[in-house]
Structure formats: structure tokens, C-alpha cells
Length: 427
Image (cartoon, rainbow, N blue to C red; front, top):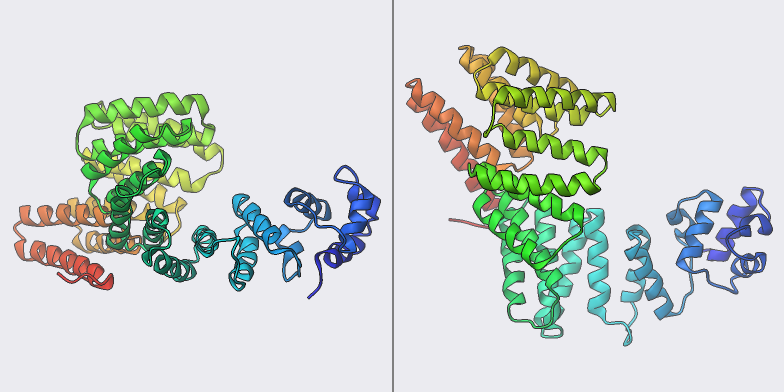
């Protein structure tokens, strides 16, 4: 295994650069000489600058390099990489430190940083294994203040696996532990409440989600953009409960904040959400016109996915107002712009399904209905799956096809039981 100095020298020579050229504007040529001869260790800032000057990823500069650092220096460098979101580079440093018995560096601190790296990279299995080790330490009474932090991360990992009931279980336990531990800052309380809000939203419990979002806002002022996004989530939660006055209040607050701070893409996303919220409170045809103006702007920017999402909502509004031809046309436009497994395709197939059912074309209606339910199941969109199932059951019952309605509801019930059983929950 080569040293960092050898790696820097090797890449520099391949690039045909002198030490003076590499050092220009970054540091002294003498420091480059010392680094290449392994007589000096660069800071994180210098390492990043060297990687940029040598035109290589930082990860490549450090991959399989023997840093030969004193343990505490290695720990500080690992933390620098974590804070700079260079998680892939931080992981081997943290693993090296865990193999050594250290007194100055608590093992639980190393494990927590390692777990956070794996979570950010989406390494679910590795994150679970590290958190299990960490929870055992916490459970043995070594650090009570760490318990809510570990449980919160366990909830986050379960959510990454779409195990939302388990995610809620861990996050609720984190909240319970917080009530027993003193001197944990309000920001962390707000993080737990926000995770509870998001998880309740994921499982379709919008009233509970709204409650947790509001409590989080009281505890933490957030920055302008985060606060605006939380206002938007609250607006959507109240709109789904048909509490239009509260929805409009929070939507307006979100709009004011994002107008001040957001970029064009964020403003367009906000405008899209606001139009969808307003459709229940104003002339739906005006909402359609606003969305058409918006989608023109988005298409000029070449963002097909965002355009597809807007066309899907155009189809939904037209379907809600029995404009079947327009609903079908907008749904088809959305389908042309979205990938087959995009979560928004569930909405598109739902629109197409009901258009065909209304036209008494049961075969095509059934096909698109099955496609919608497949997408909702694939993305664990339980609330959407329940909504479309109830809608279909009402439609079938109104037609007198009570057996088919029963079979649809039974299928949804079996799906939900299967999801719970897969997560180790048996009713």
C-alpha cells in the first residue's frame, strides 16, 4: 500500500506538473515537497485543493492509501470528511479506528459517525449492523443521552427500507427517551418530531402528521427554506383533510418565504403545489390554466420529469370534473415524459383507469387500475393505494357489482396484512 505522498507525486508526474505548478496559489512548493516525502500531513482543506488541482476525485486520491496518522489526527480527519459529506472516504478511517482500543475517542462516537455515513450513502444493511452494536452499548447503560439519537437513526434506516411501522416504533421510542433525558437541545427534539410527522404522512395519518409538523415548528425556527417547506407540508396535510382554510393559511406562509429565498426551480415546485391546493377552493378551470402556464415554463427548461408531474395533475383535475377527453390527453402527455417506474405513474394510471371505466371499457380500465396499484405497492404508497381501492369499490358498488368490490377490498386487506407480517407484526 502506497503512502499519500507517493500517490500525490505519482499523479503529479502523470499530469506533467512541477511541484511549483501544483503549489501555485494553494501552498508553498516546500509544503508540496514535504507532503510528497511524507514529512508533512496536509489539512482537509489542502487535500481538497490538491485533488481539484490534480483533477482527480478526492476519493481516488485517498483510496487504499496508508495515511499513517496518529490516532487522534485520523479521528479529526474522519470527522472533517463526515462534515464535508465525503462519507465514502470517512468510512475506512472510522473502521480503522474501531479496530484499535482507544481511550481518548469513545467507541460509541465512532460507531455513530460510521452509522451516519452508511445512512447517507443508503447502505441499509451496514447501517443496521452498526446501529445494533451501538444500541447494545447504550442499552448497557454506557450513555443514556445517546439512546434517543440511536433510536432516531434506527427509525431512519427502517424508513429507508419502507418499513414504516417499524420506523414509527423506533422514532416513538426516541421521543419517549427524550422525555427522560435532560439537556438535549430543542433542535434535536424538532428533528424527532419532524421524523414522526414524515412517517405519519407516509402511512396516511395526515391529522397526526399535521400535529407533529406544528409542534416541530414551535421548537425550531429552521432556516427560511426549511420552514417554507414545512409550511407547505402542513398545507397539504390540511388540504387532504379538506380543511381548506388552514391549508390556504399555511400555503400562503410558504409562498411568502420561498418567494424571498428560493431559486426558480423551487418556486415552480411551490407554485405547482399551491395550484393543486387551491383547486378545492376556487374555479378548477382557472387552476388548469395556471398549470398549463407553469408546464410551458418547465418544458422550456427541458425538465421532462417535472413536466410529467404537472401533466399528471392536469389529468387528475379534469377527471375530478368529469372532463374525460382532457383527462385522458393530459395523462398520455404525462406518460410520455415519465419513466415507467416513476411514482407519479401511479397517478397517471389511476386517471386512465377511471377514464376507461367511465367509458365502459372495463378491460382497459382494469389493466390501468392494476398498473396503478402495482406502482403504489412498489413505492409503498399506502395512502394512495387505500384511496384508489376505496374509489374503485364505490364505483363497482354503484354499478351493482358488489362481489368485485368485495374482492378488491379483500385484496387490499391481504396486501396490508402481508406488509405487516413481512415487518414481523402479526395481528
